[in-house]
Amino acid sequence: MSSRDWHRFLLGSITDMSRAALGTSAHPSTSMEDVAVAYEQERGKPVPGYSHSKVRARTIRHISQPSGFDVLSELNLDLGGWRVVPDLCVLPKQEGLLQRDVSWITEIPAVAVESISPTQTMEEMTEKV
Image 1 (cartoon, one colour):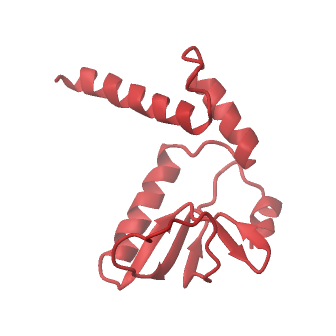
Image 2: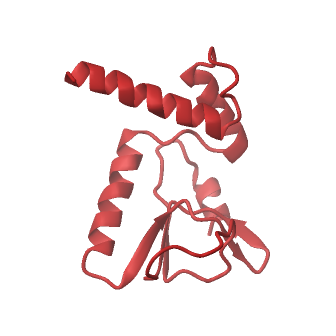
């Protein structure tokens, strides 16, 4: 498979996953722009870009390699009724997966990381803290 074919395959797969996650899989004409708008409306923030993703990936790699911690991305936290979804959470390492998955974690993470976006205001950042 050529790199161009691989890129088309990967982009198509990501588009299909995004549509499925947003419940738009029944509408194959849904554009990536429509998916991005739906994402922004649902989460109240812009779709993360390349730089945001790369910073997140590097942070995960650097924290998780030498430690006894799991670094989890976009984990839903419910901390005494305060619900927040930081970019990364650092929790004590657990072997394997949970037998029954949960949507909201109540354990306080050792560290929570929020990558600042150039479009985020200081007010938006302080609301998350």
